[in-house]
Image (cartoon, each protein chain N blue to C red):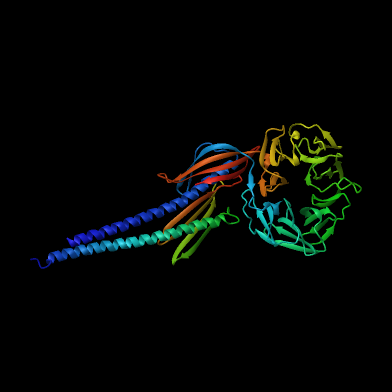
Length: 119
Length: 458
């Protein structure tokens, strides 16, 4: 009749448990970081899209400019950079980049062409 | 064994968790790519529109890279389109008055106890900044006049009877309103309203049976014109003139002025004016400071205007027996003209010339006919029409019919071309976004004139 685990079995089981718990912890941490990153990138994308809409709604959208500002959203700082520049062809390039430590960089680019046909 | 089984379960959970995370990250990546794809495709459509406006018609595939994504645009068919018609049927046409002003069309609607003034840019009908403007309505029907292309940033002037007096409002293109009250004054009967600059100041001219006067829209000062019977006040070339209507003080009432036109009718480089009444057609020639009148006893004026630049101003008289005869303006006055081509069509009201085209109302439709009289193209239902350069270019038509208002832009330029394009935006591996776009291109001699995105399907 067996009355318990041997020392070797207990040590092996503990080792397996430690390894599994370690892996689980790492996986949970990766999930948590990934989830935060996705949420932050969603916010960054929304900020970039709003920045482009706001630029298009201006009275004089075709004006070269460079702007940079920090926007705090749900305790997370986002750095919003807008660069509007005229291309040699006469087209207008609008580039918006939004970045944060968690989200990384999210960028959107839009080109505008004169609607009167003249460049 | 139990430990191994538990570990397997935990590892499976971790794998599933990380797999879910991976899918979420990929979905987010796709969302970002899609957002950029929309912008890239919009940029490509912008580019096609630019090429069309430049006078080119892209007839092969075009590839455009924006934000790391490539949009392939390919032509997808051509068709003919009639002149651009803008449907304003959402406005209650019975209560709205369109007027041309710098930057678009002013529409004044009577809604409940207010007048709502909209300044719609053309052809996109976007409300301009500062509009709509709400003005308290007066007791009587408002009389509206647009400033047209006059300088000064003024949109329109509105006059209305209001508690024992006259209220005149000037609405500027930035949405600001100046209001003047003139006690003891009323809107003339059968009013003709004009707004413009006279002596460097904005004025509103109100003429009609009984009284005619101007109101300075700087100071609110009223200046009576006291026109002699049978005269018409006009605002022309920065001056207010009181011009004989041609029928003289002793003549019987020729009826209301049905239409007033200005233009260089004698081709001397100076603007002239013309009026159409039911029984007389009058032209005031600035070079002579005199009028030329045409009338045929027993006949009614049925159509008038410039059919072609060569023929000049002409008018069509309809006798009791239905016979129609055209007279045209010559250096010595109106003379009988032999009718041919488009003159043989039963036009009603004012006709306007186009590029080898004649425009006007035929059988309750705004119609377009070639100078030879055919083909005739019906553009839209039209019982009455207001002609003006609403979009700042060649003459446009505001058509009223069936309780709706429709604007036909630059009909004198004729029809246009419908061009379809399909666009596919991708990252080089897979297509992220596809759409079809239909443009209307109205071309005049020398290149494309106007491009409008008619339809967009993503």
